[in-house]
Length: 79
Image (cartoon, rainbow, N blue to C red; front, side):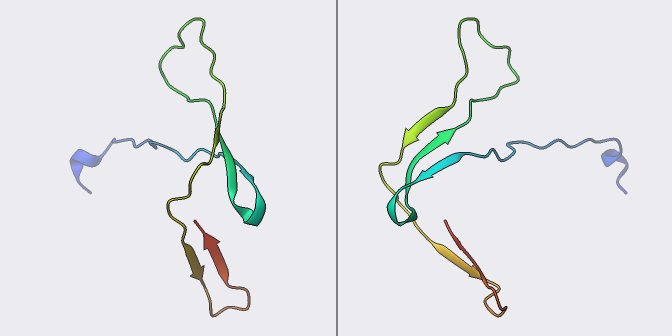
């Protein structure tokens, strides 16, 4: 083991954050709600952090991944 690497501690950066998606017809997103922004900085007085709901106006890219197609129940994901 490299002696310089001993004692190093790693921390996660930019962890995934769940969002809420409202679907319309044909399973298309209509709106997304983003959680309040979190920061390690002290909050400014008089400001509240609330979730932001945004309307989906366009879908620029749509693709599907079919995985484990050889199994009885293949996995299919759409992004």
